[in-house]
Each structure stands twice: as C-alpha cells, then as structure tokens.
Length: 341
Ligand code: F6P
Image 1 (cartoon, rainbow, N blue to C red):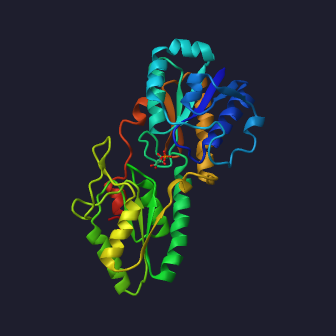
Image 2: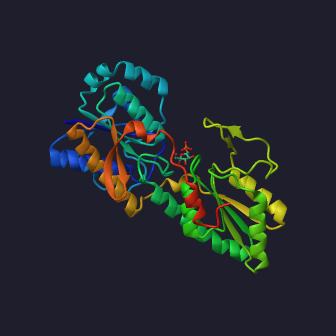
Image 3: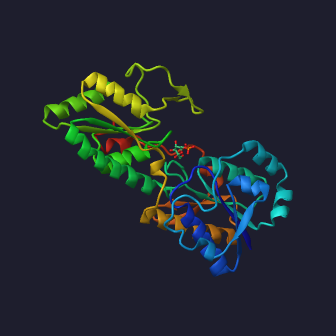
C-alpha cells in the first residue's frame, strides 16, 4: 500500500509522534510505502513529497513542530483539486491519505473524501475543541505549559503585590484557560463560553486583598469577552460565528483592572509558547495511538473517517462529525470551580 501523510494548519506538540507512528506501523510492520507531503495540502497539490522510512523518523518522538512543515489552507486550490480528484490520485498513486490537522484540515479532508479520495483523518489541536473526539493531542502539553506559567507568575505576583493577567490560547473554546486555571489555582478564569463581568472580578480581587492575600492571578482565554457594558471598550470584531472578538483581551483586562483597583496589574500573553517544544508523555502516547489506528483504518478501507478517543479507546468517527460544531466548555464543567467568572 502507498500511504501519504501530511500535517496542516497550526503546529501542535505530538505531530511528529503521529508521523513516526504511521511509518513504524506501515513501513516496518506492514511493508507499506509512506510518503510525506511537505507544507500540508500545498505539498499534496504541488506533488512535493519525500519518502519516509524508519531512519527519517528516528529521534522525532519528543520533538515539537512537524518535520513535514505545515501551511494554512488555500481553499480555492483545494476545491479545484476535488473537481479533478481522479487526476490527483493517479498522479500521486496513493492508496490512502492521512491528513493530520484541526478544524480546517479535517473539513478539507472531508471535501477530499467526498470527492473520492481514500482519506483517513487524524485530529490535532491544542484547543481540544473537535467534537468527535474526547481529547486531541497537544492539549495536555498546552495546559502543562500554561500551568507552569501560572505557578511561576504567582511567586512574582506575590513578591510585588500585583494582579497578573495570563492570556492563554483558545479563540472559541476555553478548555486551556479552564484546565490551566484549575491546575494552577488561578483566582479568576475567563472563557469565551461565558461573557465575564469585570465588576465581579474586581470584587473577588478586592476581597482577596482584604483577607491579607496581596496578589491575584486571572487566567483569560484569548477569545473571552466582557459582558456587554462591563468594560468600556471600543467594539470588537464580529467573527464567523457572530461572536464579538476582542484582540488583546489580556492587555486590555490588565489595564482595566489596574485602573479600577488602583493596584499594579501586568498582562502576560503566553501565545505560541503553548504550542512549541516537546510534547508531554500523554500527548506522545495519544498521538502514537492515533497514528497506529490510522494505518489500520487505511488497511481496512475505513475511508472518510478519522481516529478519535472515546473514554480510553481509540475508535473511528466519520469526518462528517468532526466539525459539525466546536466542542466548547459546558456549563457543568464551569460550575466545578468557583474561579470561572
Ligand atoms: O487553533 C490553534 C491555535 O493555537 C489557536 O488557539 C490560536 O488562536 C491560533 O491557533 C493561532 O494561530 P496562528 O498560529 O495562525 O497565529
């Protein structure tokens, strides 16, 4: 069997572990040929690829990023390719294609599968917001990095009697903010799913100071937004889901808190630090399992599907279910901590 693999969209710790696992299962165990397309779908459409053997994936398990490179999707070109899918298949001689990616990549994977390509998807995102799987690899690493940042920021906040506002990733879902906030013991957590009241945050911080605790940490998702009228901001930008988005919410919230509380506040934007570097053991294992099962699915002819985690089992889920709607933080998860505002 000739299997193509590619990584598309934003990078994510664990991508290399999937590539390695695909090669180990396919080349070593099943005597397949594996080719890796460079820079995501761009490489697929341009026919830019290299053969992957056991040596080319040696030593990459713990490495962040992707050895294949990644690129954001050019939808127009992909649509064109779908219209000429037979020509594409013939040119590349593929028996299976394993695209590894998030929401955009899995949507593209579905388009290709609908056009007749033998596609088995593998979900990835640090945001953990893909509905068809309980978890995506990369999330555990992002939460670990953000938790460590909160731990570190607490000691400097306490020394200077400051309010620290830590902005983490998560445009539409607040999973990283919720779990890093819980693990790091942030005093306030703000998620995109629930507009927050700045008054309530101020009251919590004032109460802390009144109790003799001379610092506070607020963990805010990049997509969190203040309740209407709660922060005298200029208007945000309306995104594709009709939600109002405020860029730089961490900076703005820190300024607002400093102004209202009369205490020093500092924003810390963790940004792409959460996506870089070595994956945690959990993410390496999940990524490795996804790679193994993707190869098995290809051999069974389970196309138009993606690997997914259900409980502790890896199952196959239709690509059509992958991105019906994003998996956001439900109310009962927010209720499990008093820190969500
Ligand atoms: O979807 C993953 C993600 O890390 C988001 O949390 C974040 O908003 C976005 O990617 C950043 O993307 P870029 O790398 O294009 O800045």
